[in-house]
Length: 615
Ligand code: F6R
Image (tube, rainbow, N blue to C red; front, side):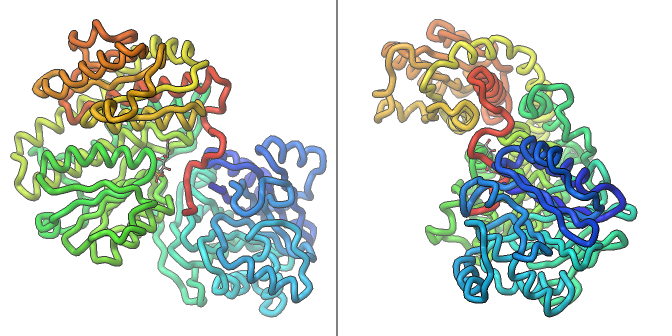
């Protein structure tokens, strides 16, 4: 979704802003623009397409140099990705410039009102009304922060706004409601951005802004108020990522780098969560044990890949704690009037911490009296801030749009949570918990081993690049893994890919099987769960008999699958519930390689955004 950068300080604002926008590219966008205050005026440039187009424009028509500026990468909502619709938007006098992330729901009425007062609006966007309203308010109050507060009170919807005004040339003003905005605090310079990656090359001191707040940035300081002008409480935090964590580090794609980082991400997420006696100590879970003991239901809400992590978590939570667990797509959750109460524990899983559907679901849950625990990767983001408790995943910055290392760490966090609930409620003995934790601790090395054997998977992916359809099958925790494999392939390779529960095949999808159709089958552990294992071996035979080309992901030592596998991918043997930690990895590599072979942009697939901040 849109990326925003604002800067005030001693450096060239254009350089800082463009570099910041580059670091936000991963969010997904289709046009970009900048505005700089210089020589008593305001200079702006914007272009549809990627940042290189904007840079070309800036090289051909340089802007005056200044040290206060704003920039934007736009993911189109209202109006196509044209030059005219790109941000910043200016008022008719060209004195105020504004960039925006979110949707202003009452923009049509405001637009009509402005037109009646003689304003000429040049774009199809909802944002442009804000530039005109700010110009009007500024002409009466003479202060951009106050003008912003007055305008915000008139806006409905979700918005992060950042603006500059040529008549107040040492100030950048931002506002936020339901969309992310973080302040970076430097020495004699300050930053505003959609997320910290835009400014970590300059400072790692940050301030998270709350709901309905306006921030005024000068070189000297940062002032935050609510929309009425009252001083607001804010939380300062230190960013523990460094700039190199957000660089490609020699890999062709961020996605590849992030796949390779998974062993470390898994280990980091486990770090410090077990005390010397082997007890889990999830300090961030600030929900009292008594409340966790009383919980009669767990409801997981999430979207996309995080939803798949939730589906896997359900197996662990129900098996280890015997608490019923539902998993729901966050976008569907609040619209079906879910049954929630004070004894419901809602778990909101989100890498970005900004996904609007998940945020709205958690708000709904809290309104109904439920306790909400966030599983999140992004410190300072909205979802953990609005939750009762948070369990951070420590995946580090995930830049590629397709989620990989965040998924594995979400699984680890969910396993820890399930064990913790088992510990608190007494449904799991200490030695059982320690045994699973030991297995979890080994899983980083197992992922490493999977990564070392991926060359045949890459070759297979390249050989299938011409195919139209690939199907994925799984059972038990392998079913969400199949869904995740299919999602990765859809979003990266733009291919028809579907995941099915293998047992469902004969209820319809088996009609899709035809000669040489590739079908990936995630085979559960043969140990201790032989019924499940035997059944999937039968499913493999059924599809093979109908011509499918079978790509079988099975544990080392599982010989029963060998006769039926056209391609065999081995993963280390793990306890059944933990198998997704290893079986997902070949599917990530497969999708990444297949997308590359099809010439697709791996890190920024078409039409997608990293952080989906609209409903
Ligand atoms: C797929 C992917 C998305 C996200 C989903 C939720 O690879 O990345 O499906 O998982 O948009 O995002 P978060 O976890 O940020 O809430």
